[in-house]
Image 1 (spheres, rainbow, N blue to C red):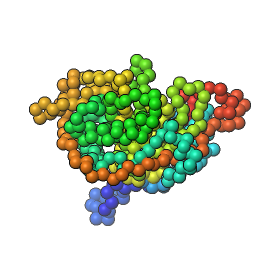
Image 2 (image 1 turned 135 degrees about the vertical axis):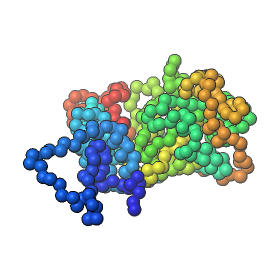
Image 3 (image 1 turned 45 degrees about the vertical axis):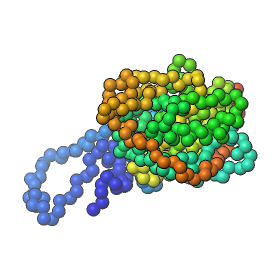
Image 4 (image 1 turned 45 degrees about the horizontal axis):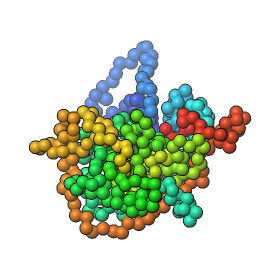
Length: 429
């Protein structure tokens, strides 16, 4: 018998599940005695009205997370076509799925309805499933903005780290982690401390590589003293909005780390990371960008003052239980990344210390068990040589949603003299 939880829904059952309508009752079998009893016919016609629950963004996203076939992806599009009108969040979802499927003209009206004048190009939102080879020219150009390396951690360390962040790890439950809901939180480590956890070991490996390959070649860069880390675990269709990285999310002024790094702990799930040449504080809109595809034990590094984000995964979901798992590491000098003890989750918290049988972080009375997943340290004497990798260049970053209308209104990309308002630029969210 097919496990219902694992079954990819057909249009009928899928529509019923998404809209909250009970499916039609199954006919009783011939040996069902209750079915054999004749019922008295009613003289009055009774009209049964099934209550339809409003389709929400969350219900569509939940269904999208389970869409294992192209047919189900198409079913979701059909549902949105009939329900998205006058609901910008649903229209945004429909617009994204149209672009991902190459149906650019159909996406236009929905994005205009939501007030968008510009959008990430189809080279980005409709990214190729296979990474395009970088040319010699693009390799040289990209070095200022994004660098990638494979085989970064010794296998023993990588495997231990991946296990510590496995889906049923207490780390996720004890941080109440939910995609798009859980507030930002991170932990700070001193780089000159002796490693006592596999997180310490991973941070030191990454910091050593960054100092050797990037920071030492930048004459204006100071020596990193601290590392701040956080993690993301996302289903295939989910992305992360375009942003600049800053200490404590920019509160109290923008302070950027020396370098930002993404360590991929998984591959084949979710979209690529997009890194652009759009620098914080620059008034001219950049059209340059690079896509960094996920690969286990690959690190992608970029300056924290450039605009970047994660593109929503497109097409059928490879595995509904799979997650795009990334460990983020920011390297800081003497400025920024102030240690912030707090009774609630937030930026730059002290790493928990063990007291008796539990772990505690400063000013937080709650006991944790997740740090036990990161001890002891592992032998890292055996390793594979680190290999340079190159993100894929994209032809251009932004498109006009409606070129003719934008030109008529004097706001086309070719007419812009400054960066457009953030809310007028569609990113897929």
